[in-house]
Image 1: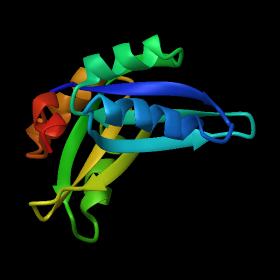
Image 2: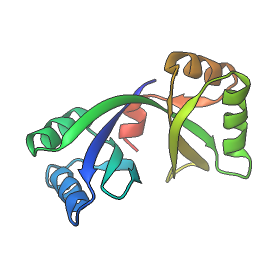
Image 3: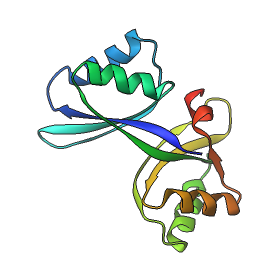
Length: 143
């Protein structure tokens, strides 16, 4: 149920993001989802890719500061209130969300939300007990 997320620490300079995506693209690594959190001087690029182990190794070899983190991907209804239902459940069970980002699935009437939480196993158990679909890493990498 865990999804490997690659995080890249980037200086806030012209072309740095293009270098990352160029390295991944030229090695046939497909980006499934991404998020950027930035400040004036630097940013943290978070990526879900089809081959996280290879992406990690390639970016490291190119001199980027890279880390790998376990996150969970949850399928929610792509309708008003879909995200709210999941967030209320997390709140009721005192599961702290460190950050999240979302994207739409192409084939389904669903959206996927990527969560980084403090207690990942408890979060997965809580979501599944409440009939919320938590995707396996392989399912997300193949989207």
